[in-house]
Length: 435
Image (cartoon, rainbow, N blue to C red; front, side, top):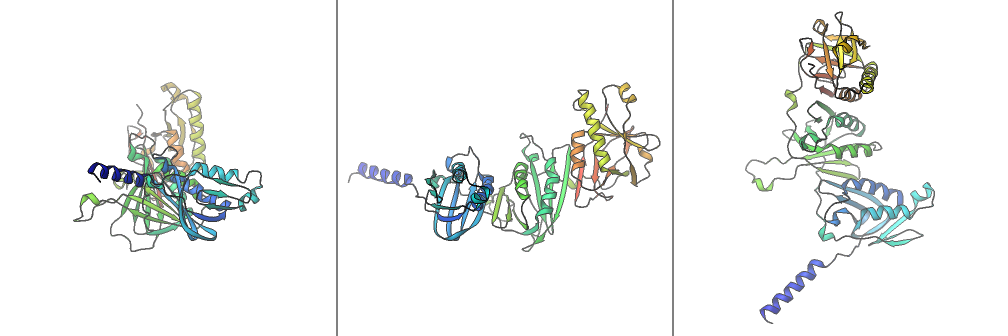
């Protein structure tokens, strides 16, 4: 054989090897409702416009008494293990996710919810079947499928309800400006027996803590990653129905001493919810060191009735909207006797002078309150409502610095109780300086 013939033969063989598709071999039988639930979670790892198209597929792997549904959109990797009705042979199929989910819904059309939920469904390669129908599902080339992020083993566990409640407190504070990607994340730090979550959009800063139980030897130093708030927000909606503990594992991109830079791991976090693991890629960067931003001392602490304050802010905000005033704050105003009202800031000095705010019952819990007399503290009404909405008690405490020329000159700190450190949660809100 000549050299040119050898090259042609080699090229043909290589091309054939490259294009040789992998036949779908997953084989299992399960219950319709369980499969749909698994796909609903797997959808966190599906990007409808992902490239290559193979990344829009769900990888189904069978073997033993379970089937695993996996998805990966380059940022989030999801794995869901579901028990099978009968032992399944070892195999795998990469099926088009949207088509599979829609076909599953179509195959139980016309049935009652109860019958549909308990319908037996089987998969043989790419053939999806019920007792009434058997149809092929579009497959993708598994060679083009990027390997997902490896899950981080759980280092600690926490109560799902507590984790969800604290997560929902910090989510509204995360930024939405994609030109400042660091601020669109929730910073998650595991330190001993505490998981801290923090978020900021430059105008407010929230920090919530969750007690955890270590499942391995705690790391020598805190581990911190920055997870997209949008991912955690979508996950929070699914966590509403989760019962039981949640495991968490973090992996940072820190370089060990003497380790080459080229082998830095991908920073990520994994949440384990029983048979479900969700691994999320960390954003680059980190939030400002908030320990230095939150004040440790204040001039005055004021306990407010939360429900009354919420109503007052909504009324003042409504007045601003009615008058067509945008980007205008509402004001906590103390008279010379120390009584507090909340009022909208109008567009004229005369209008402000003639406006009477809604009274808010208060109790001074720190300081004398003398510095507040005749002063005011102005805040963005939407941000203020968000802050008030993250608390659940009947009262909240507002910690204030010194007044300067009759106005608050530093951000206000909100906590549940009288302690400035908060009781697992604190919210710092930037004040508005009035001209």
